Length: 357
Ligand code: SF4
Ligand code: SF4
Image 1 (cartoon, rainbow, N blue to C red):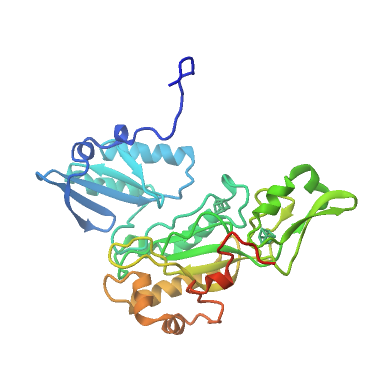
Image 2 (cartoon, rainbow, N blue to C red):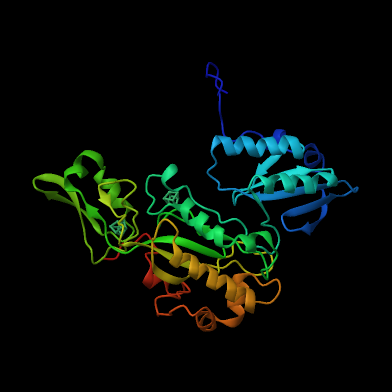
């Protein structure tokens, strides 16, 4: 540290080891194998024989203080005082004593939490922040997750699927979301509407112009005031101009839709990583229960469950049967725009720093 500089009071994430169950800390990096005694429970055994049980319950991610306190009280009373959250918003309790597992599950279920989400189940949908923290959402991610998980509760609680299924949502078209076997993403279908009275006061015009991936935005004078204009023929309705310039409103109750993408896989453990592909577009962004999107996700999951072989992830299954067969089995309408394998990306996507006019 430079002499005279104040001591930082906060710098990055705190050291996670201080919050870890002592047995996990002791054997960190020395797990010999793990087993799945029942849905929602994992047993990890270290070299040397020590074992620890993890009980997993789904949460709504955006937790109020009372629910958090309740979850912590359950951890103090029925577990061993240690919890952690997974990237898919599940809470996990670690216990070294096997006799605590069933009473812990009973306590969680009594309070309305659902235990599951391990092995070949549908894990909790990973959702983005939506209205609560973010400035650009076009839907309420938490609402979509809640509506879908209400209908997928049995798939969360049981091992019914050929392999694990990860589902994600995103509440705008350009940022988070999309790390899953199935992704439910926002899809804008109309260019932004510009409020010219506000642009000059609010927006840094050069950065908005630079933000557009297809160079569709130009500076313009409107009613004598500096503003912007959009070449609607070029605009791909991505919404990237809306975060730096809120007067370029793109969210719209009618024209902001949902789209469903499937087959993404980040891991290269057993097969190559894969891109997701669009399989359903223009789905109504129909709050508060999003029945149309939920019905499509359920149909895809049911078809995967009925047709895939054991251990095939969604992407492996589609790879084996082929996309035509996928559309036939799921009864989703197929158009030439739906499947892009990105091989033609040089023509269909602005993939370079060069701007094409
Ligand atoms: S998906 Fe978009 S709107 Fe939603 S939290 Fe992420 S950046 Fe914000
Ligand atoms: S929505 Fe996207 S493509 Fe259209 S003007 Fe804005 S940044 Fe450009």
